[in-house]
Length: 614
Image 1 (tube, rainbow, N blue to C red):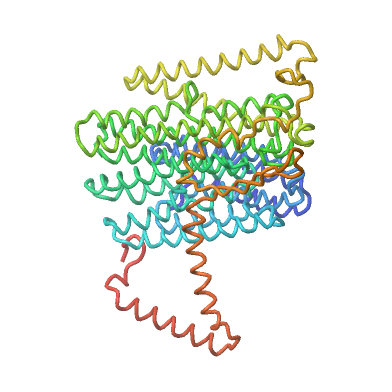
Image 2: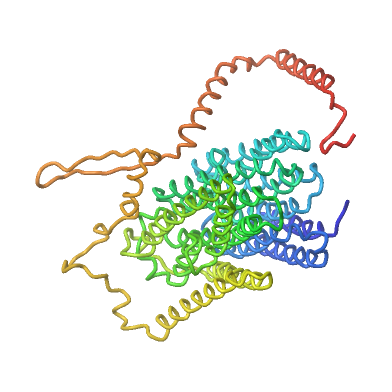
């Protein structure tokens, strides 16, 4: 049935089409695309408020889409200069279609409509991932992403065709939506697509698109299953979430590409969200504290991750714009040259690690409470699951702190390790202001969480949220006083750190990011299996020595690599069917059609369609 909620989507799509028609007039294309997108997002939000009773279930899921879509569009105005600005018309066409399709996914009420918007979302975002199509790595990453999108759609079709209640619907739905979420072994596209995509697109995909997989699971899988099945589903989500959280952040440690590290961090955070939902499904009684803490923590972490990770990806775009690189080992000393955007990046990094007093801690605290409540329940299954979540969350938090200490230290601290880093400077306000807005939104979420906790009788949550905001604001005030009121002597701003008495230190003497995390990777080498090539120095005045280290993702190298190799081998054997004879092709097509007709006639449910409607 038609709803006025689709009118803003038409505005968004029309503005994208208008930008495309502008051709090479890049400023006009950017103006039409951005204006139409913002107008559509704002009007969609207003209509959602007026129709809140009908669409209240999509409010939380729509917030990341709207805010990240808005901030990403503003950020893109400056980011595209020097990054494909001549193709702005295509960029805004597919960017607007992606945002509109994501909102359409939330409005879809029938399987057919849902699949249409889901497929449009995947195809439009594929075009954005392949925006820098001249790069070989980008073409490879976009090809993998397209395969994942189509495979996910195939499993979703099978999910809708499966019986409403049963194991098949759960399996097909878990794989189909899990490919978008990035669950273990289904995450292979994330570390490739994010470094290839423009920074605003990475922010939108990581913060708003991949959580839609949880929306799909909750809407089309968990809501139709029997209560006794929810326990098994909760255990599966707990296991997958724990592996994804710990594995994701563990393999983020050795990464030297900023956006690749952030992509693995997204895998980690999706794992944390999955554990929260898993705990909630263990006890489906909505009045249970396990359910309230688990579900509340998972939903809040979706919002926190959207704002924090969105800000980090936009911050990565600022770094890329300033240094023309994403390799953190080539940077250093950027905090002195880019204090405003650097400070926001540091604050967002602390928040995404779940460190108090930032907002990421609040959502993880709720999941901790759900796990502790499960342990105190006295039920053996709940005790095991709660202990598992506590151990995984604790390990994940510690490793995340190490990973982001490596990232921020290698990029912003020390001395520049390249000429481009030495010449870096603060970028346009169109790029930095959206990052500031996202951080302020995250602080606002903390306040809102505390107020809701007070209204619902959770006074401890209110106190934690209030202290968090106070400490963050106090830190910001002290930093402002240090920079504006007490700037110090001019020569102090560019002085080097304590040099231990050595009068000529260089950047080559700095502790690198890879060296910082090497003790952890060495400790976990039985899982990570890093490859190292060392050429030791020979003689007193050695002329040659080198050290190379690479840690491959086992899910890609040892699982998907073998599968793709197997498929490639089969493809080579059936290549003989491409004989070039038209008669052979017609014969193959005819045989396939006859086989499908026979299969359809033999199935007892052949007369039904998706959703079970005769």
